[in-house]
Image (cartoon, rainbow, N blue to C red; front, side, top):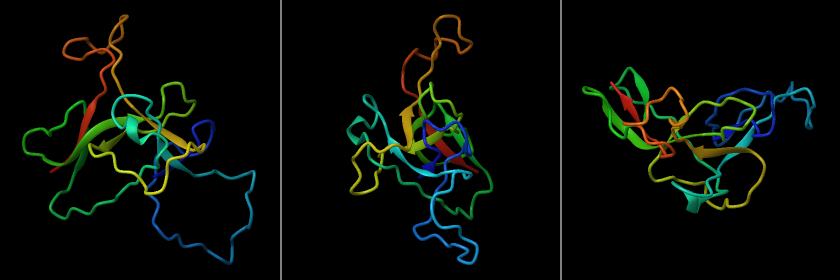
Length: 160
């Protein structure tokens, strides 16, 4: 999984699932790092507590799946099951960059297993994933009960 560096204010906002082997347009490549480009960095679990705390600083893999029997896919936040008639593709924890990051990145549902890229375990500046929790106290618009202030949210990826 790749994305913009957590401390950069520019670039794209979404996570990307990069292929194992890229294809370059060798006739048009400008060698070396250029200052007038967007940059992609790896994405790491950055969870000092809660889900996946044992995977801190390890790189997050991703997958792109083809499901020929379904036409629509939905990330269903705050649930680990799917609405009636929908199939659960997988479930896990809702994750995103930390709330204080300048950039707004999309939320992702990370599989309950918290898989990692083998051989990664060092904090290297890139994109960070943190569990997402609801803040419902202090007059915020999300109602406490049934939500619980500070609880990490689950999620499911559903298909129909």
